[in-house]
Structures are given as C-alpha cells and as structure tokens.
Length: 342
Ligand code: SAM
Image 1 (cartoon, protein in one colour):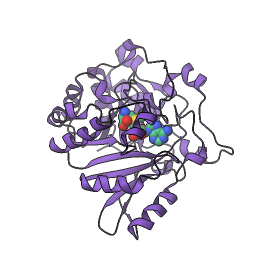
Image 2: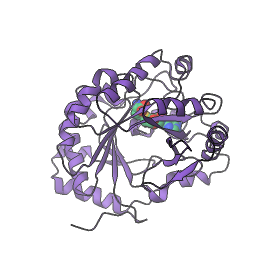
Image 3: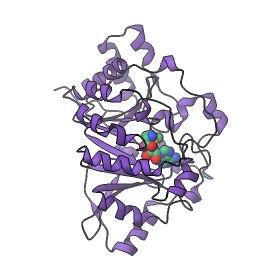
Image 4: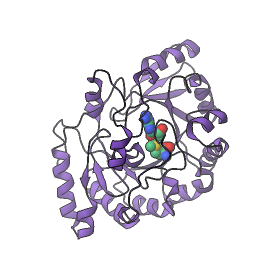
C-alpha cells in the first residue's frame, strides 16, 4: 500500500462529492434565489462513462467515500446506471446521495437496487406553506413521500439536512427532531453559509450551533456530544432518550483542519474547497485522451499543493456579507452552490 496522499496541512484525500447536474427543481432562497441562471453548456456535462472513470482515478488515490449531488441529482436521467457503474468499484466503501426528495418516491427502489448505500434528503421545513414561499414549490408532500419510499426501499440510515435560518424555520428545530425520530431518520442542522448563490446572506440570519444546542437543551434536557468520525462535517449529539442528531457548524465553527473533501462539478471541474475561487479542469485532459496515470498525476499534484481553509478564512472577515454578488456568479457559474453541489 502506498503512502496516503496528503495536502500541505496533512489532510488526506478522503471523500469526493460528485455533482451530476447544475439544474434544480427547487429555488431555495439561500441557494438559487434568482429568476434566471447561466447554466453549464450541455456539451460540457460529463457522460456517465467520463464521470465513473474519474471516480475510479480518485479511488486509486485513496477516495473511499463518494456522494452524488447537484443541482438536483435525480434530474439526471438514468442516474441508477451511473450508481451501478460506481458501485461496481470495490474501493468505494460508501456511495451516498443528497437530494431534495421531490423525485425520490419514483426512484428510491431503483437507486437501492443499483447499489446506492445511503440517502440524505434536504428538508428545511415541515410546513408546506413555508416551502412554497421559501423554495417556490408546492410539492412538500412529495418530499415526505420520498422519505417514506426511501425507507421502504431499504435505505436505513436516512439523514435529513435542514439549513436553519432565523425568521424562517428556527422555530421548527424541535418539530424536526420529533419528525426525524418518528421516521427513523437523523436530522443534521446546517448553519446558513455565505456560499455561492446565497446572495442575500447576512450574519444575523445565521442560527449558530450554540443557539441550536441551547434551544434543544431547554426542551429535551442534557445533550451529550458523541465521539464520531472526526472528518465528517457534522458534529453528532445525543438526547437523553437516545435520539441522535448532527450540526454542521461551517459558519461559526468551521472544520477546515479536518476537511478531506473535494468536489467535481458536472462539467469536470475539480474544486478543492467549497469557498475556492476556481478549480482544476479535469474535462479537458479527459477528453484530450489523457491516460488514467496522467489524470492521477494532475489530481495528486493538485492535492499535494492544497492549502485551502476557506470557511476559517471567512471567520476573519470583518463586516461579513454574501461571498458573491449576482454579477460575479453570472460571470462564472462554477461559483454557484448548485454547480458545486453543497
Ligand atoms: N438538490 C440537492 C438537495 O437539495 O439536497 C443537492 C444539492 S444542495 C446544493 C446540497 C445541500 O446544500 C442541501 O442540503 C442544501 O440545503 C445545502 N445548501 C445550499 N445552500 C446552502 C447555504 N447557503 N448554506 C448552507 N447549506 C446550503
């Protein structure tokens, strides 16, 4: 076994998020609030063969965890085919997907059969009226059906992602814990981040990990931190009755020092940090006919030079506001969260 690949801060190349499309069927206010977008050119989108080949090269360099995301990954036609291609690679120990759940009921069984190990569903609110105003969608019921279908299809450790925003859903923390518990799922509260399309971000809308714990502690009693995988973004906690939940405190308590994640966009741009200004173009060498060894060299060199600590650096910004204005997102859609894949 060769030495694990490490960046300048000693962080291993561990998990890979693969965005399969930049398109989405929701318009969440914290991610895609605009009326129109500049999309990645269709011909630039990697085929399943290209994506699975890249994943294979990453696996050869130590990646064992892959998460499919987007945009909304279930908008990509025949996604189970890609899942089956990746799942065949025995070096990938964990193949997960993050979805908004709208189309999950239709596809859950096929995703499971194709070899998907785990599903995370984004669920910001339990109130359909809130989803209508906040994500411009009347289909809250479909998300709930999707969660139920995923469980029926045999997905066991379903996670629910909730971005907590003051004045929108911060009064639903307890209800979401109760919902997750009764659906055998685990909720992960995510601090609102000033990334990509969050052009309306401001610090006063961020509900911090500390506040979330205080609210839950008042209702449920003493909360225990659980020791867990130190490289996972969520810190996990336990309630007195054994219910567990996570918090991703990327805004107030970032975890850059342990970050082993990188992202490939649907057009093959490799991003070494969610906050990175730009990425490494892997599509060009791939389509030019580079061998796997040549692609591995590009990735190895890129990771060895990695020094990104984007979220920690944002902590030092005084008068912090949205990272990007809309003009700068239009100039380069790679900066969008829906392109980077959250
Ligand atoms: N469409 C899928 C979904 O909704 O889960 C996958 C892509 S989405 C970009 C991935 C995750 O990023 C979601 O859980 C979403 O809530 C989260 N996200 C997007 N913008 C965010 C922001 N500004 N702050 C925190 N989380 C954000």
